[in-house]
Length: 94
Image (cartoon, rainbow, N blue to C red; front, top):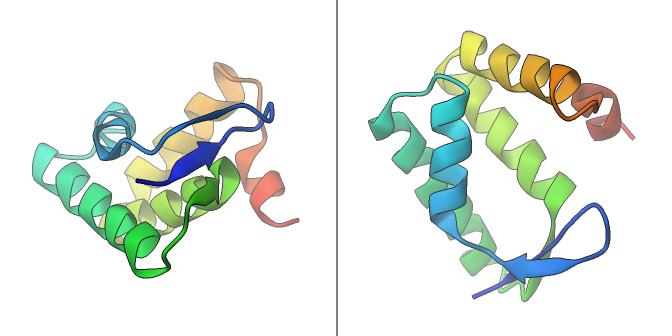
């Protein structure tokens, strides 16, 4: 499976369950969180990626969260700003 290149340059295995957990934290239902994780995993596999940038993963996840429920998307953005001190929306526009 692919490696995720984290923002600090470190790498870790891509684990779909981490996508599920992140989506659940944003308020997504378990069904929606699993669906989003499957779609993301499919994108990684179909592209044959051995490495994927964490920001790219975040972009994909947020795009799918927003399609499912705008509030879940907003929750993710607010959490990143308040807890992680990141302006994710601005980072994704670069």
